[in-house]
Length: 237
Image 1 (cartoon, rainbow, N blue to C red):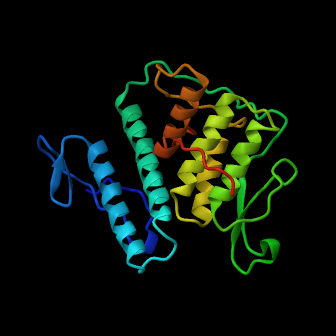
Image 2: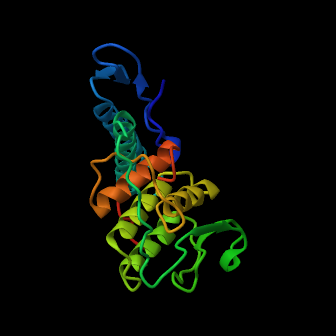
């Protein structure tokens, strides 16, 4: 079974499959075996990066090596989410933790739409649903809109730490998803799952701080357990 689920594929170059089997070194990538999935997934991301960089250097992929570096960061971040998810699945939820409603400060509804006809475009694009608090033009990459929303939650919205952490988690997960309705769905499900409309049950009892609570909430969403994935802050550009 392939446990590498990162879908980014610049130049059509996908991350190498990470095959999970049995034995003392149950994970394998390109014939190399590993004790833990983390190392194997990291190798998978790095092999993809090297192939991407080679394609950029020989001209078969336009845009330079920098985009390969960014994709590699996304691949590693995505797999850190998966690792947290596996850890949560293995822990006994003897004491459930209820996620408090996120405090978005002076702002509301930080969700993202994927629609046609935005700003005169002839293709679908992303835009913040709430243009009053997150007034930004449309973009073809969700990173632009998600990054702007997360930035605004810091200032001027003055949202709390849990909301900002959850937004960065949602942004990272959406960026690592196909840039279409699926990315908007991922972002919105995480934001809504940790937001004012939902509580997260069956989260590991060790979670106590606001950032940790947001991280656990995100992981639970990815698992499909409750309404409660993780995090690099994507800057607006």
